[in-house]
Image (cartoon, rainbow, N blue to C red):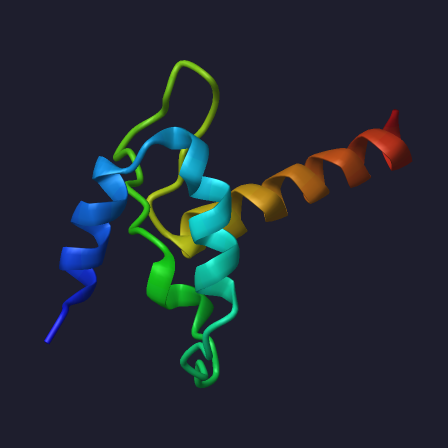
Length: 83
């Protein structure tokens, strides 16, 4: 039985002028029905820095971000009402 890897190897050997034809040929065949796509299945993990970066603040958890946001709102309110 031919595997997908076998096909990929043959495609790699093809002359570039044939690729459009091969693509159109492959598109004519039935494709697997994808079940509900999980958007997280193709995502990669995010590496958060542990400290401030040169470009600005980096928060290690949501609580730090929430506290900082509350401080910003409080400061803005004080400036607008006491300034």
